[in-house]
Length: 329
Image (cartoon, rainbow, N blue to C red; front, side, top):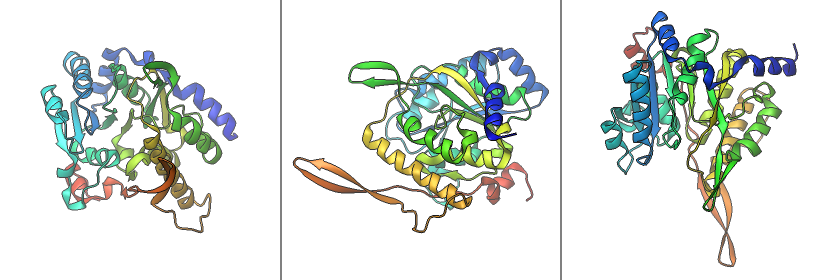
C-alpha cells in the first residue's frame, strides 16, 4: 500500500468529530471496565485570565458530575500573576515545575512542564490542554479521551479546529495558526508525508497513553508538539494516531516577533529529527541562536536571539520515575 492510499484510509478511519464521544456515561463505563485512571494537566505561565474557568468547566462536568477525570492539575512555570492561587481555588492540584525532580535541573517552558507532569500525575491516560482557551468546553477533554478508551490500537490523539484571528478590534472567523499553515504542514508534507493529514499538528490539546509518553523524549520550547508527533509516529506508526475536530478554538494570538522565534525553534526541531533519522545530512552544526533584522528609526539593526533546544530523555530512563511507578528496569 502506497503512502497516499494509507494516508487517505487513515483520514477516513482515524479522524473524528467531538460529537462522536459526547456520551460521557458510555466513556465512563469503558474507563471502569478497563480499570484506567485519567489525568488532566494544564501547563501554565501567567494564565490568570482563563485558567479558573477552564478548571471549573472540566471539574464540574468531568470530575463532579461524571468522574471521568481522576485528577486535574496545573504544572506551573513560576507565574508572577495569580495563576496558582486561582487554580487552587478552582479545585486543581498545583505544582511548580521547578520543585519537581530539581536534581535534574530546571528549564523554563512548556516542554519541561509536560515532561515533569508524567512524574507528578498518576493517570494511565494523560490529557494536556493549553491554559489560554477562551471558549472552553468539556469536549476538549472527553473528545480526546474517548478514542483512547474506545479503540485499543490508538495511543495518541490530537485536536484540530478553526482558529479565529484578531486583527485590530475585529475578529476574523479563521486565519489563526499561521505558523502551522505556512511552515509546519508544508514541512510535514515534504519529509513526513504520512503525517500531512494532521490539520493542527501544533495544537496544544492532546491525550496519550502513559506507556508511549514515558518512552519518548520531550523537547524544550516551541518544538515540543511537532517532536512528539514525529517521535510517536516513528515508533508506533500512523495507525496509532488520531485527530478530533473540535469545531473552533478561541485563544490569544501571538505577535509576529514571537512567531519568528516559534518558527526558528520548529525549524531547528525538524532539522534535528531529519538529521537523526538520516533523512538529510547537515554539514554545519545546527545553531541554537540566530539574528533578526529589526528597524529602529531609520536604522536596521541585528538583534541576537538564543533559544533553549535541550531535550529531556524519555522519563522511563529516570530512576526516580521508575521507583515511583514501581518499575524495575
